Length: 465
Ligand code: NAD
Image (cartoon, rainbow, N blue to C red):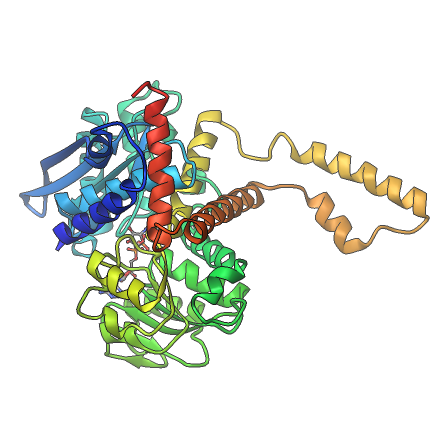
């Protein structure tokens, strides 16, 4: 199956690369993965030596460090990691994050191991990666992905620091760390937040909304979400609590929850934390994948790759799909959906919020200062003076709400959010322009890939290639 994923990504690349003039052979060089590393390592656990298989692929080093998550899953394979690393190269280029593309994986079901065992396995994996500079602030910076989170990143950073005790920038060796361990405010929810900003940007482009036949605005839109993990949960939470959208279907392991009036996402997540699954929650049904085909306005696959294939694509009813997961739609399914007029906001762009805020975290680690620390008091004094001036001139008190807003100043969280929103809006505007003005560009996926490849070509060009 993961071969299908790699082939799908390569097909998109080929289609977009054809539209770009390049030096002979350069299109192939940009397409291929530079290197892949497979490690088999042992950890003594439960009275015997257990062998684990890990991967780290580096797709492109046109910028360094290279960047990409590490996933823990039993679906991990070399082809899957290479497909994900390739996506990372173009994702970073698309949102103008100066990293090359990489990705890693460990063939493991995290649920099979205790926390203590997972820590030992993660630390050992980190040692293997460190030996080959596949974790390093200047060479290769992992991040969380499916099956990993802040906890694993904290173990990795700590192990790297132990191995490199005089490296001043050691914290920058991974991103997605807890805030108290070199992380940044807003990183945990960044990918889901990015999905929200992507949808807001889409609805701010009436010419694009028109292609779906949807009414303007996110408010009241009925949404199907697959996967209530890090990305799916945060996207669903923000869209329902802040934008007035209704999450009518949630597909998770073991079944689905359906509520035409909108599911309380916070309560469902609490239920999952308490009971270990969605079973027993109001509206639970044992139905699974067929729920993707339900009637709604927007579909958000946020679990894993290859869920919409040529066998179910023609039954998908939502006019708009936003790929919060990487590679949820195969190339064949993409063709079927595009022909039917379904609008797809592609993974390359839709889930780029994570790497964008990872970039902010990496910069924070290298500069050894929290964002906003130097400016906050200065900005308070500055706005106080303006407010006093306005009050003196008008003889009236400055409105309280605006006073509070002006004097609160920028915190790390507000700066991260505004940097992320700006990045997502800017990238959306570029994709939309390309899609709407270039007759050779059939959809947003090719538009996004074309913009990304052009930037990589430019970067090679500045090396004289
Ligand atoms: P996660 O492990 O936190 O969540 C995945 C969720 O999907 C889990 O709740 C799991 O139970 C559910 N799931 C698994 N199999 C399922 C199935 N068959 N049907 C329905 N639900 C199922 O992972 P995540 O970090 O949220 O990543 C999800 C996707 O987003 C992946 O494709 C990942 O590559 C992509 N992504 C993640 C990030 C990030 O910052 N975490 C960034 C970019 C892209």
